[in-house]
Length: 342
Image (cartoon, rainbow, N blue to C red; front, side, top):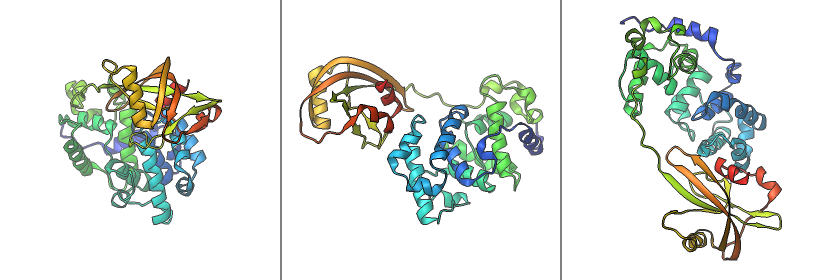
């Protein structure tokens, strides 16, 4: 079990088995960057159609930098985690205005850009520019915790740091692009969470988990507490073929459009209290009517349950924003708002 890490076998396996992903054709830094941002919290089969569509609309950093936020959010619609899109847009402006349109090569320089944390910085530096950096995502955690028999809790930041340090000791210098992708690809295609295909694994002969039949014991991860359910009331107010919509100013889903919506407690809040919430939040006095459907959506930290009702305006103290019904789908809408529209 003390056999050196078989980098040559891993790289050979990657050469023969890597998927023909579009950014692997030329490793254009902008394309790699877009792919890595999209790949966070998104499966590869879901990512690819969005990737192609996004690059068609924003083919260069400059085009993205010059775009308005609403069009960027609309193009991101369906991928979720819209802060990623806003950070991407902001960083594109930084590259265009401060870096003369050139994406930085090094991890340190990349971290000066909005949204470039340790992972994205390492990924772009190594995959786009072949800098000697290591990348640790969920696939790499799984592959290497099994290979090393490492029982550290992968949900802890200190474990990521420890894995990065150990990976740097086995990183073949000058081959970071292939090495990092190979580990991620191995986790995606062979070293799967359940029933890994160990007979196809180039690391098999030196793998701790395989040798002792402990694949199911790694990686070690603290179980998450089930996120709470939060209830919201949304209202559909329609007048002369127009819908009442608001543009969010809150941090979550900032810049997205939605029906007027308030959080409420279904056990204690009656209609009068809910109507008061709308008055306080939006400056509109409403008469709530019949139910018009419901929608649920799972965020990372809570489950959103939205109950929608028809409503009419009694009076308002704030300016109202009306949108033609046929134009609503051209606006950036969150997944739950799309469900409410259908």
